[in-house]
Length: 540
Ligand code: N01
Image (cartoon, rainbow, N blue to C red; front, side, top):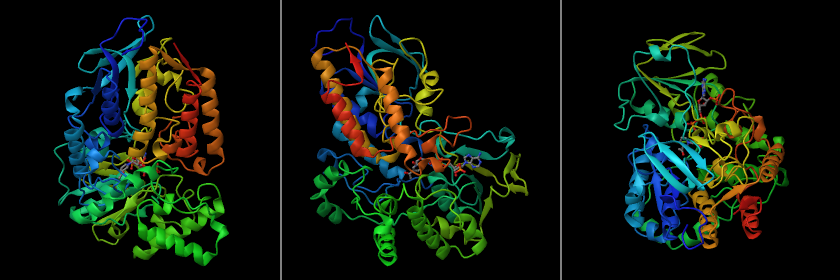
């Protein structure tokens, strides 16, 4: 590759990237600048990754701008948003703007899905296969498929007999589905469910919400943004972008370094109220340091949250299902989502709440959803049932490593990675936003840049040293895995059946799937490894 002394024949590509979201586009832009021959493969017809697929009514990002965008001034200088939390259409326009600045499309193959790949040791290259029957030969593969690339639809009996329309939120028809006047049923109350439910409540004739676990949703506090306001704010963008790389969540909330019981109850409640009014994830990521570690501390946050919901929901019985006295799990260890009028929707006559803990789903019928207390008719069934998150998208590509083992088999007994970036037995393959990396615990664009920069530096090193093979050792994997699990055990995260823990998918090993030690310790580990000549990797 490039300037170094290649020891083996050159494949067609230096790098093939999979996925045109924040991470993939960043890689394409920067790796091309190294003079590498790079192609990006994308299954959709447009840019944006998750924002291409998630086009259900109400889909909008839970991280506010400018934190949720690239830090490159060439991009933000001339870009203006209408809202603090943009919707999927605005995000798609943003990605088109990114393309107009970085000029990416010519190196992207759209409507192409990578179905599998085989490592060829003799030639030190990957042979990737696409669903269209093409083969690409490349020295390196960078998977940027995101943590939510594989939708999960529960195996409800009778789903195939449903006579109305149904869709998973992440497979929403690109042409849209009008909810006006429809009789809508929504299964699932995660981030996707909350958004589609509050939208449906405004226009549908009737909405039935099927809740299994209450969502501890926070107030979004959406605001319109003006052009003038953004012009003023742009003077501070460089500091803001710098700041987000120095936090543990990739946001820019000040990390207070104060524990919950270090302050009086009055001060604590004042702080909670201020964070609540700030909106977004401030209440989650900008509060007391022991929130996710100390159960009693956590309970104070839960009780505050619960009081906010009960203030808004008129029927106390409904409020108790949405926000029970006893927490379903500690606050914030299952991802909270952001809501605008979600809780108010339950005061409307056209919205019903079904508590699946009391009356579970038995089957989908031709005309609706049957629970143990009877049939709930609908003509549009929305599965907001989430994802085989973090690992699902990666293992659904049939990748065969140096000994012929698939990535799926390599992880069958639990995920093994080095630095959440690469796996033993899979040379020249890295994944961004993947398992055992900050992934679901880090603001997406921040992670795309800081983790992405590490990969770009790695590729620069390989190019400059003529290195044609890199693979993590089995020992390094074991060490990283032990560290991820050890840190997770010190937190309250294992206490929830969340996608963070792989616990939302029946049969999936229950384990911490994200790096739980914060972005700073993660970056320090990555940088130390690089400074020590890529410790934990074998290079040749
Ligand atoms: O998925 P989820 P999501 N019977 O897994 C329920 C990101 N995201 O698509 O909690 C009945 O959170 C399940 O119930 P339970 C964001 O990171 C971001 O909403 O397992 N119900 C749960 O209520 C988010 O965290 C944005 O008991 C069943 C729901 O389905 C992640 O994607 C927008 C069930 C799944 O919730 C995933 O969010 C959307 C069953 N058999 C998504 N199986 C924004 O940034 C599952 N459920 C705005």
